[in-house]
Length: 310
Image 1: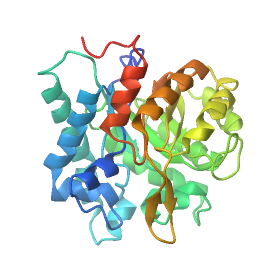
Image 2: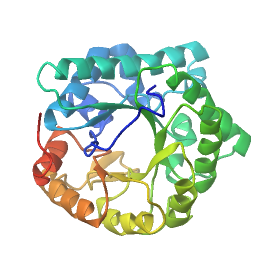
Image 3: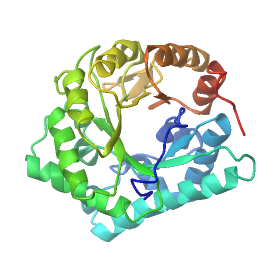
Image 4: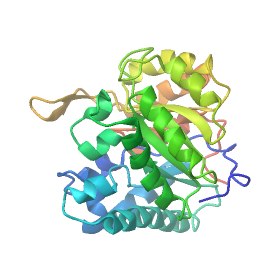
C-alpha cells in the first residue's frame, strides 16, 4: 500500500467501468456467491485483460476484482480465511500486471485501488441497497478490518470502499481504518434518490462526517442511477472540501422478478453526462454496473482538456 505521506491523486480524473459486466461479455461464469471474484480462480488472465482494456480506453485508475472477497463469503463455500486473503492479494497482482503491460504503450500515471464491497456484498442478497443488516456495529468493524489488514500488505495505492448503504457502516469503516493508519481510501455510497443514501440518511450528513476523517481521501457515489448524480454532487459539495468521486450505473435497470437488465446503455450519452458532472463539481468519474470500456472512452473524449496519453 502506498504510504500516506507519498500518495498523491492530484492527476486522477477517470476511473474504470464495471468488472462483472466485462467478464460476462467475455464468457465468464459469475454466478454464485463470489460473483466476479470467482474468476480469480477460474480465469485470472481474463481479469488482467479487462483491466488492460480499461487502461487503453483512458482510465487513470483500475479497481481490483475483489469487491466480493471476504473471509465470511469464502467460509460459506467451506474455504478458510487464507483462501480469501490469497484471492484479494491475487486481485492486486493482476491489476499491477495489467498496469505493467500498459506502460509498454504509455507513460501515463495509473493508480490501483483495492475494491472492498460493503457487508451486504458478502451476504449476496442485495442488502447493500438498503443496509438493514442483522449485524452489530462491532460486526461491521470486524468485517472491514479483516480485509483492510490484507489490503495493507499489497502494493496497491489506496482502497475504494464501495456501495456503502448506511452512515453506520461508513462509521464502522472509519473505525476499521483507524486500526490501519497507513491506509487511505475513499468511501462511496449507493443512493436511492437525489438526496438520500440507500438506508435513508442524507448524503450531505455522510459527507460532513467523512470531511473530518484524515484517512478518507474522497467522498463518492457509485452504483446509482445517472439521473440522480448531478443533484447528489451538489449535496456532497456543500458538505466537504474533499474530492468528489462518481461512478454510476449505465442507466439500465435490474428486473429482480425476471432476473434481467432492462433499458438501454448509451456510452456516448454517458460521456456527455460526465462533462455535466465535472461542471457540477465531480473531480473523479467512472462507471459501475453495466458500463464498459466504451463508456470510459466516451468520458475521456468528453473531457478534451485531459490528454489521452503522455
